[in-house]
Length: 126
Image: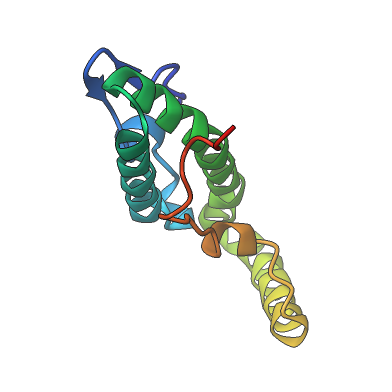
């Protein structure tokens, strides 16, 4: 998926899959869109005008969503392997899942445990 160079123009903005479609294999499209709406609402709440709010929204969201999109692109190939390649894949996934269950160390935690603090202002005082 190509990236969209700019998510806003004048009084128009794109969010969710329109701005940053994720691979279906990562299952984060709806989550990213919900995060977008919360961050956009905060930016509209805290900004003096729409142009400033839209620029702040893109600045605050772009790095995270591009990282999620990249992760989805890396893992999507695992789901479309040939029947022969599925055997070692399934073994690796099984071992990795058991290890994560034992240790609690999930390398994807940054995706699923992301938190947006509604009360934190978009702009810091001072």
